[in-house]
Image (cartoon, rainbow, N blue to C red; front, side):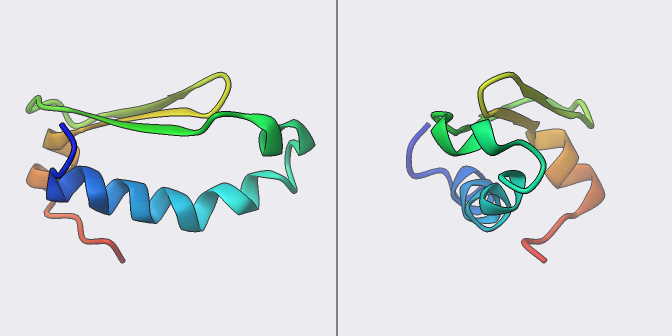
Length: 68
């Protein structure tokens, strides 16, 4: 949901990484990038075509990840 600090963190990281995608796939500049966060204990994340990125909160919580 908007305003979630974990989602905001993932979106900030994505904004730093997305420009790097153009070197690998020039079409990436036209994608409608989207970062989603699913509330689940699963330690998982994945990407889908067109710039859709999904993280599970378990990945952040259980591995105690930081923005670095």
